[in-house]
Image 1: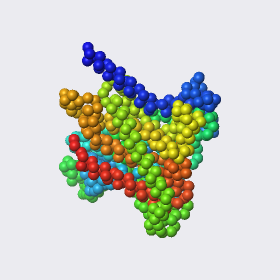
Image 2: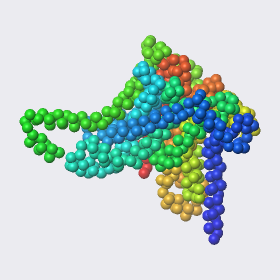
Image 3: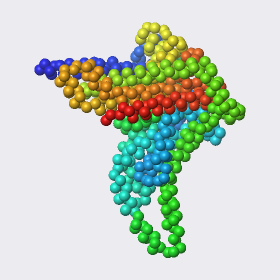
Image 4: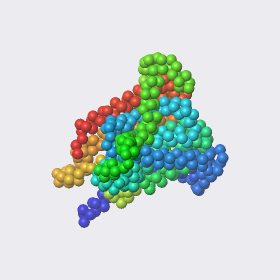
Length: 277
Length: 306
């Protein structure tokens, strides 16, 4: 009886300690949501919670032709999905070679790929910018997609997964007269769905959230991505604030959707990708 | 394999060259699978890596073309400018705040959710959630929170501090926002680390009469130390690369109060069009990060105990 009482006290204590910590993490987002729903005069009055729900900022963000929000969201989707599918393909091909095939220089090439994880993107960004601008690629979908069509992290993640398959699988399929590419397409890729899911969720989110590269290589509203789009909304006046916060909510919703529905895959991808930072 | 050779030997003499061609193709086959990956890495990683080193030895025109060879001149230039050392010092402060702050947040949140309780899943999802938030979006949110007259922080504290515009607060503000943003990844890794500590160790300690903090100090933290070390390195590298929040919250200012290395590179290249010195700064950043990574590798080799 006493033990039971102590245990429930313990649980209550845990909940009571978790609530302030959860608030600390959630407050920035709840505050953003709250400001985005306020009429302008309430932002000026420094109220915390809007007296009524006011969707004008969202309507403004979507319908005002000056903000091109729908276009930016569309652009970000095109780029994120292309990069995601591209990496799934290129990384599957490379990981397959590294896990199932034997060839000269295999070890050296693999180390070469792993060593790219040590080079932070920020250090090569100037040279990359100069390359794409001399190729005349600036302001296109291609310039946003091409540099990210493969990643060492993706190859590494998929290779680790392929290595868990039994070698006999490959031998058996070869005896059945299956070419390597057929084995990859019909056996390896379908069996790699968990790893591909992790890679896909991670890459989609990373690309959706990208800032520096799209900032440098896009100039026109035609190709601008949504992260650059919202960060251009800021104005010092309170009217701009509500709009800006609505913009933040609009870009966060797809990120949170991926997070909520693919949390497990995303975390697996993150744990593989964190090595790169 | 044997079977296919036999079949080929039965073929007409004219097609005898076929096996040779086929083996050439099958020898080349593995490289074909690697071709797309190496094409991307070649153009966007290896080539720019060497081009950055090359450019760092030149003065460039405003299109980034190498014009005058200056050898180590750009390096001498930046190493003798007080602005570079200031930027390095600011980066160091920022990195320390973010690395330690993120770790502390991760440790608290992972300890709070280490054992199940009603609402446990919701709490864990909340603590992991910042990993999904874009740094640009989070920066805009914090612009609002830190707003001098209408922002939440001044509102709650009853102050009127100009968080982003006051040199005393600007770096701290950007660091606080970055800690919030990186608390999710810290939570995920430290939680995984905590789960790997065998229950038997706690049971033994409980028999010895250890309380919560005794267990924390004598079992949890020592067992977690490899994870803590790994995570602090991840945090350091992450902090070194932070850009959007600097650009969107302070623009490197006020003055140069938040002009971290990555921001200084950006400013040098894309505002002053000094691609040569910006490349030299990039090389310095690369060397710093490589050194940290190598420290991590060597420490990990020494401290792995499964």
